Picture 1 (cartoon, rainbow, N blue to C red):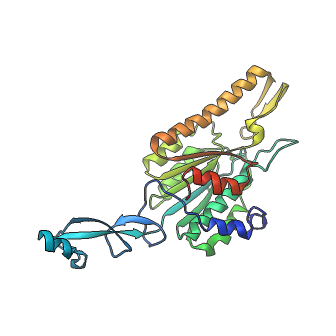
Picture 2: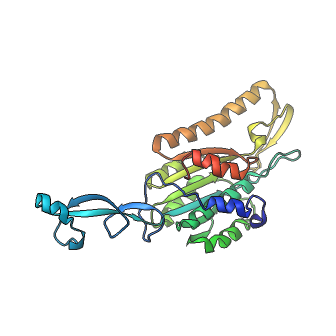
Picture 3: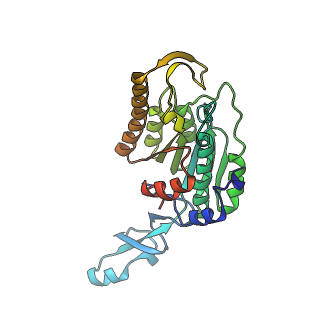
Amino acid sequence: MIAQDPLFPTEFLSRLERLQLMARRIAVGRDRAERRSRRTGSSLEFADHRNYSAGDDLRTIDWNIYGRLERLFIKLFEEEEDLPVHLLVDASASMRWMPDAGGIGPAKFDFARRLAAALAYIGLNHLDRVEVNFFSSRLERGVGLARGRKHFRQVLQYLENPPALDEANTTDLAASMLSLQRQARRRGLVFVLSDFFDPAGWETAAARLHAARFDVEFVQILHPSEVNPGLRGDCRLTDCETGETMEVTVDAAISAAYAKALEGLTSELRDFCRKHGHGFLRATSDLPLEEFVLVMLREGGLVR
């Protein structure tokens, strides 16, 4: 159970409370929270001026400027507001895959769920509106946008009870992201936690999120045995999602081709994010969660 996992001791949670999820484009929310966005209003810090227009609140006129220039300007402020945060956890068969024997580290799915819990705690602690959804061939019904730490238990219960694997548990990133785009009432911050092993590719899904003007953070999670399979000789390989099998003799050339293809997937994801202003990080499931959250997420600009 995630709540009883040693990765979530009290000390770790207290360190998470010092972090804040970062949007690369500030989103305007309905409720004031611990986040700043540019709006006119009675807020905490002055930001800028604009010309007075008929109907503006006279209380926002900067009379000091009027005394010097005899022109009317309205004071603009920075308001602190909430941010919608969508945490999307890939629950497909490839994410739950583990080597038959001698596996190192937990399944990718377990790492993704723990990471989602940590991110949810950070967001809830800073009064962001947090939603968590599993997805595979479709976007599953999740925890609706919740605000405040009192909802952390609800998030944990959802993450501890994933949908059962069945024949439909293949990855369809495009369909899942389209569902998010249709149901999200406001733009916000989206974390996609996945291995991105989608037969149809990840490009359409990423383009949809970008076109919808979400701030997107892609976190690619791989198992150590996927990064370094260590296979040699005659092997029968089975696709854990489609069930397709392949007979192959693994030699140095095949190993090099596999490594190149995997690195190509990662490089293409990273290049897309750099080009369009989104975040990207890659992790292996044996990496200590505390190190990933407190060090790598901070260095990657996903939290501060």
